[in-house]
Length: 109
Length: 139
Image (cartoon, rainbow over all chains, first blue to last red; front, side, top):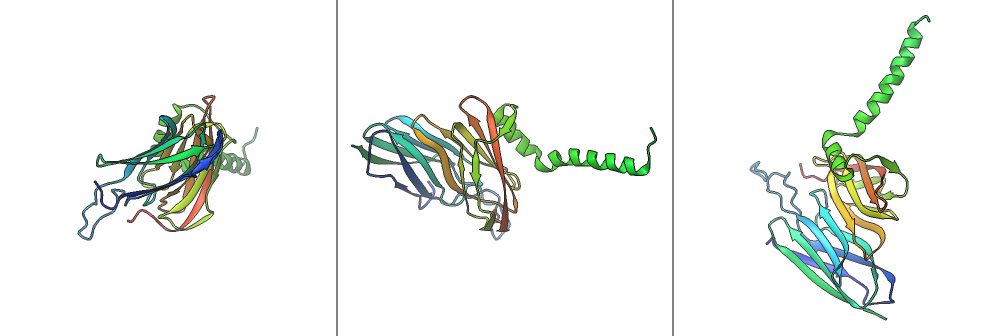
């Protein structure tokens, strides 16, 4: 597991049914491209987050495949429709096999 | 018909123009990535908006955003990077307006391409040129 990985998510706490809400996510990760060399001229191996998904009550919102051209600390902003109260599940997949997960609840009034 | 020097030059010039443009815009790796995404289908224009800064001072993190009303997935490519792939975004049933913003790395001044697969199975694309002052691939 890469060091210092911390997901941060912004989801509104409340919404009306059928509303479109904006979600912002950021995960601290070094996103090593595999192209850089260290001071001895050796290649630093690639280590990135290669997939990010967001689901709401088991239904998919977005599923993103990431390549090394995504910046350090991958940031994504997108919209979702919330039909009912529930939980957003965010999942990041690391090159080294680690999976980082975080959930956020939303109340629909 | 008499072929004079002036006529010949004009024909040659126009031929060179038509053959050079596609060559310049597309490298083989990019071709592959696009073919994998579209399956060789024709790509139209319109119905997709790619927003990029005109000038990016720091190529390490260039904010971009892409929106396409009826897209089911969007492919992002940066044609001047060592590896043109940037990201593939698939929208699920609960996604709202089909937009996303993120931050990408650009090695040099180059074209960024967004290709959207629409819900009816057709493809559309938008291209923007970004001027990069400091490249972002650490090499």
